[in-house]
Amino acid sequence: MKIIAYGIRDDEKPYLDEWVKDNSVEVKAVPELLTEDNIDLAKGYDGVVAYQQKPYTDGIFKKMDEFGIHAFSLRNVGVDNVPVESVKKYNIKVSNVPAYSPSAIAELSVTGLMSLLRRIPTFEDKMSKGDFRWAPDIAQELNELTVGVVGTGRIGRAAMDIFKGFGAKVIGYDVFRNPELEKEGIYVDTLDEIYAQADVITLHVPALKDNYHMLNDDAFSKMKDGVYILNYARGSLIDTDALIRALDNGKVAGAGLDTYENEVGIFDVDHKGEKITDDVFNNLFARDNVLITPHAAFYTTKAVKNMVQISLNNNKSFIENGRADNEVSFD
Image 1: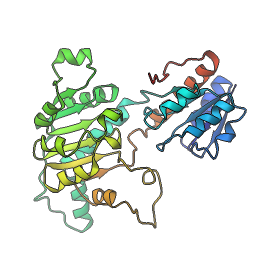
Image 2: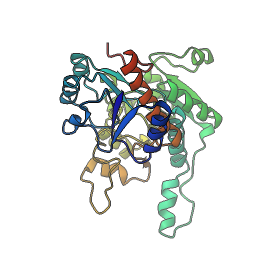
Image 3: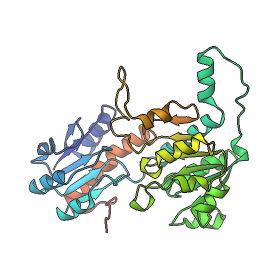
Image 4: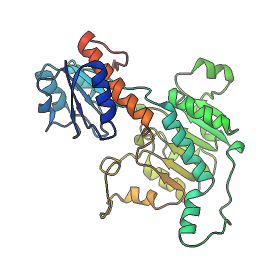
């Protein structure tokens, strides 16, 4: 058995090597992301493992089919960059890692909110200029706020537990309700109820056609004045231009963003000595009430280990048995 893994970073290599030792399977680690230009490296291998934010193309899966490879395992959760028609056409089995560490994402989302509530970016800027006065930047306390969690899967539930620990009132919305949360009476029936009641709205849903730009001008207009927005899920969930308008008119008091709808080419790239040319991103980045992290919510030792080793387990299972615990259904 031979597996090729694309986009392997230095921090992933020790966990890959550990898995190889434990499983006695040959794995070729390729540092470059998977593209049509380097898919030929997969010839002679039985499975492909990959992780990247940019889209996978039809040509990649066509070549995999030509090489007799039908096992494709992602090291991440999201499959919105996988062309469904292509994997069906070439009979490619796809798996993901649905729960590498829900706490990792949840913890950073709460960290972002606390930093905004306590005006940390503002104080850092003032103090860097020698101004150590606290006024007028008075804070809010999370225990006095209502947090609306959109998406109550593993990550959403982990976030709920942390928000509850701070004493916040938590309400939730999900098309698919969790029975335990249902018993607690946490759910509201509509997104409009979240918008009307929540002081903080945090998104923990996958990117789907149905929720593209779910937070748009209309959604923001239904929210409380001074609401905080957290997006540690997918950039396409927010209409960024609408968010900027809501920040400008004070409807949104602050935003914590680990994702941005045009983040490819910006995040996980060293821009020292050069200017980012995306004016919309620069607008957000310049604000002290917008806290941006570069899609790094997943980036903990536990999560990285799970992403590498669970994806390799999935790929090995596909090759051996034609199925995997985390196979993604596109039906």
